[in-house]
Length: 191
Image (tube, rainbow, N blue to C red; front, side, top):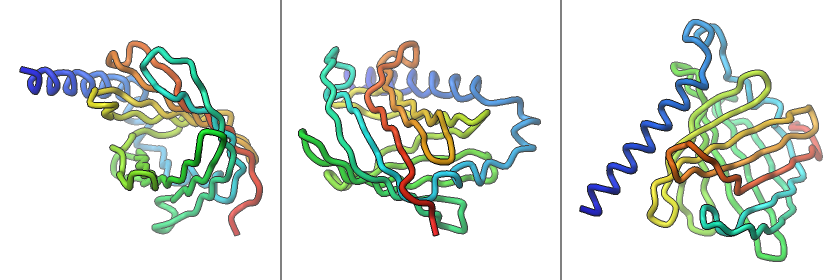
């Protein structure tokens, strides 16, 4: 029974995710005209990163911790992908991870994949893209054995700064709780 319930919840989360990404996308004709392959080009280079992280997401906790460090973003695969290496630390420890962002020219969407040096595991990909200077990416994930949705937003993009925000939903996307806020400031551009 528990296994069937878990699969139902996971399926419900996937249906909610599909509905959100479908409604967030422009009409098909507009999507077909736009090639988003270079949407992350602005980010290539080295960045100072200031991060606030909610310690126990979806638990009712309001305990946040802060980190500072760097993000280094490099183009790979003929700039159809990029690799981000994140190194931050603070009073509560260190985070060292990497994101691989891949562009699919058929769907004209990006997928974001994250791996932490702490556990060596790759997360499920988040899918989405940029529209009007804002990136939105969604995907399912497990949080302590619970099926949830993840939303990752990139906003306030300038040549020398950007904001990254991650939120979780435990109710199929009806409500969201922000659990990660990063403000990046450029140190140097990619050579």
